[in-house]
Length: 81
Figure 1: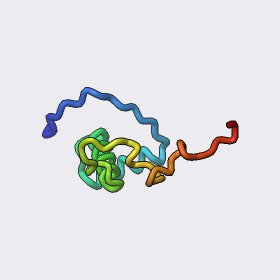
Figure 2: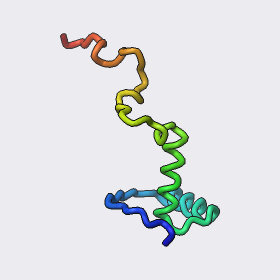
Figure 3: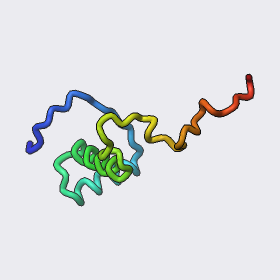
C-alpha cells in the first residue's frame, strides 16, 4: 500500500446499483487501487471544486452561507412574534 496515512474515522455509504457501477467504472478507468481510494479521491475533487479544501484557518461554517452582509435568519421577522 502506497498510502500510509492514519485514518481513524470510518464512513459507511449506501449506493444503488447505478451509483456503484459508476464508481467502479471510474475507479478502473483511473486505475485506483481500491474503492475506498476512489471515494476519497472523488471526495477530495468535489471539495476542491467547491473551494472547501482551500478554506483559511479560522474560517467558520457561517462564512460559507448563502446570504452575506448579515442578512441571515436573525434579521428575519418571525410570523409568531
